[in-house]
Image (cartoon, rainbow, N blue to C red; front, side, top):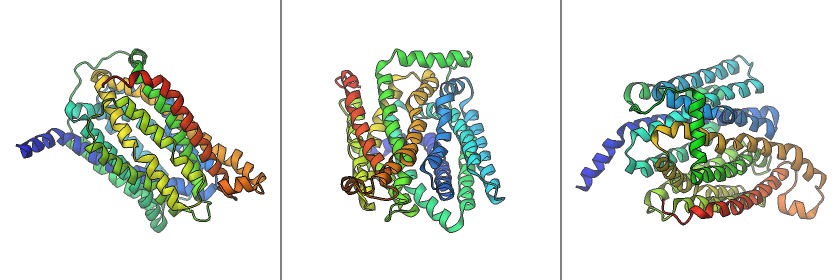
Length: 431
């Protein structure tokens, strides 16, 4: 009987599993290209801010277009939307390859192309989220969320290691070739093997009217809105960390590009353990409380461990502690969201969430890079003979980035404690 139930569950999840596995493979290829381009641009410029601008350009469309993208997702066929977005993103990668092979690739090319790719992802992401809801039974939401966390974890582990290895051995062109190969697999799987159910209540109203419905729903659902705004602040701190990390690791005497790849991969290793933890944990008494406490622990550990250490193994352990609880947070957040938002509204509500929750990512990336290049590196250079500062944060290039890590640790803890007061009213209700 138990075996039969397992087979039934797998049959129910089969379309989702095909989509999840092939899209995850394609996301790995895209992440490898993004990481390799980061290495290439840092080699060309030596600037944390210019390198962080790559990711800023990818996330900027979330700020500008997400609300409308969700309305588009709810109005048009989701499968066609995903296919067109995948194809246009792949074409932008082909352009990068062409420019690189003809020795014409420059930083501004990457910024423009990343903006195009980011726009495609902005339109595709709400359609993908709704598709996941449509392809899985409600009782499988947490399992599906765990699988998505698992794939994100694997991508976090593999992409910096594979990108660094392939980029170092064969150059940017092979990294991009791998990316395009994974795109073909995902594109054909979606085109030929996935049938996405049609939502009977999809509307034909204007994009503006549909976008307004998403905003009104969030306004009338303060628990969801509070959670989104809380994670928006978390994203600000976390993305500033990402913007500062290359400037912290690469110039360190014990660092470098390979060490950066290893340190980054440990975030993925931590998320693997976190994803396994999600699969064995019982349903919590209150999911909102889990979201809050996991982020308080993450914000209060990782940044400080990196700020005060010059040892790569400590940086890796900091990544583990900072990221191991993220899948736990993500799974509980996902269940709250999917269970609260009606499926016919999810595209536009997910898109409004993207704007509110992710607009801080490009801001944080800019702040992280800017603080390293223009505030704290010059500050540490001026105070290079301060015994206290050198003891705490080291000396030379990279010491300013260590100060940034310390500042971000303080900011993250303060944000969690301050927002906890607003979230407290939801921590005593079973969800």
